[in-house]
Image 1 (cartoon, rainbow, N blue to C red):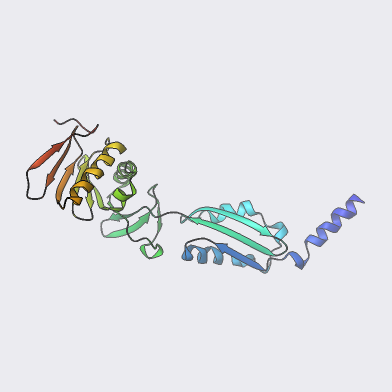
Image 2: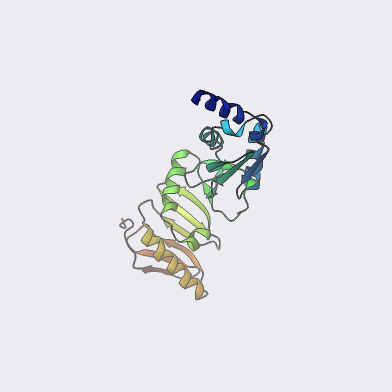
Length: 229
């Protein structure tokens, strides 16, 4: 009886009743959704929902560098729902005359025309080592207002320069911590609110040094950073 029952279930599962009729792809990025849909539509007319290995398919679709995670759900009798979470664009990477979109790990995953958020900082890095250290510097900037004000970042010898949208230059090193960046941005905002223009803010020393445009250099108390030579 058990053999007959198992055989009956096998035959029933093999019927057209469980053939995939509809594939629904959900996600924020329309281009990624389109490409993922193209990849899996080939199963629509010739695959039985019962026999689809969702884990294997999730792993396959996750190989797309634009995809952060994939979750596939079977909806019986004949629908497949694919939920896509795309990688978040972190910045542009400029190498010579080429521009790429990278995530926070420094991985290239999209073209400029594939993202909706165009207000991203530009990282100037000629090699992988420079990119990794610049990402370390940026990882210390937790204030979203500060990060969104960054126009460009580059390495200059053993130090780093952060250029803000209004032209203010921030000189820094890899050892400067989050607290000092927070103090830097508070100082910058207070000066801007007073209608003052800042030429540069230097975080490389124990004190935060700054120079207002057309004014003398000013020294203000800071934390950590590199001791002056």
